[in-house]
Image 1 (cartoon, one colour):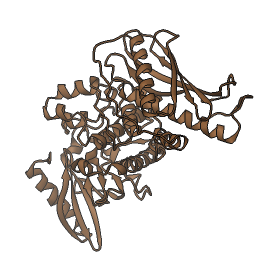
Image 2 (cartoon, rainbow, N blue to C red):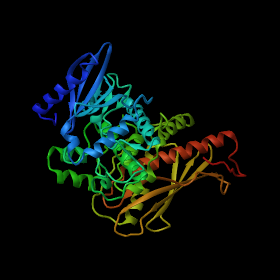
Image 3 (cartoon, rainbow, N blue to C red):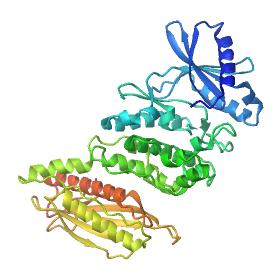
Image 4 (cartoon, rainbow, N blue to C red):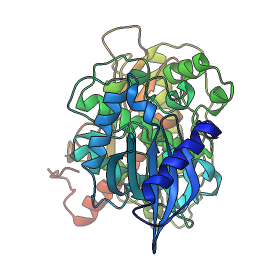
Length: 465
């Protein structure tokens, strides 16, 4: 629904008609409007463009200087060569306002076609979105308003374009903290829905890391919507109560229900991006995470084990029992180890998960995986790093893998890797277990590869992966 009144929208059309007169062409339908501007389709010869017209009174209000600065930043992108970012043709101040001529992007607005996006297109679309954001990041710019409403996809869902640079800002300058709400002009709910907690509640001073953390969170919101085929915090937004929405952003962990079609790695990435704590989010997510292997390690391990055993039974789907009662950290780690062992045994029947230990109370454990067909063992050390403050019940799960034969003390090892956050209060272990299972699968795959090469033997091996 347009936020601009019909009367004001008609004024914007009159201004647009005056502006295009010396340039030629015809003005078509309004493509959309917001609190400060309207965008019209402009046919000029064989070209189809999008013409953004700003409300002149906007520049007279307290947000005027900040808006002019954002327009200058957009003007600096004229002629850019990033195909995933909307192109800017020209920026001109005239008739007491600003006119921005942009690329017309055909296709569908992502927010209106979430249910239509094929599951096998999600990785490609998220990768293209990250290309646009990396392009901005390298130029010390941040979009700040990444959401399905600002993403256009082609009719066949093969290409994606990020649009609406209206609140872009530099990442290495102070001030102008509020951002996507355009001061008093934009509704709080539409802004808050895809805002990270630290951004919405002004919890951290702006910095390049702060803005990158916001970007990761907003990409996680888009990924959530693609996976769940519904908007992030949709129920809360439907209430039209700003406080309910704000509390959901601060406290509620979005659901990412298991789906046989959507890869585990996609759900795990969305969960890491939507981590509430900024410092943890920056540890758990990097730009490289948006360019994964087309096949998960768990899937590749299953294919490998099929070749080792004639009688292979497909993995049985097991349903995790979620205990929402407040539990101690020690209970949480113990449950994580037990459930991970159960799922590894259930999914990969040709391997043996021989023991689980909790030798270091409250924080660590060990799983030993044995592949009897080739006599290889993989020890998985699991460490949960809890914060010093005893109040927060969220810790970071770090894993470390060692491979050996029955007679080898130590063969090769993987570097320590922080893979996810663990919340002992909610006890929702689904995604931490998914991440652990994928790490374990990857470690076993590497052990099998080195075993095939003959380098994993009784004398040990110094190779790492």
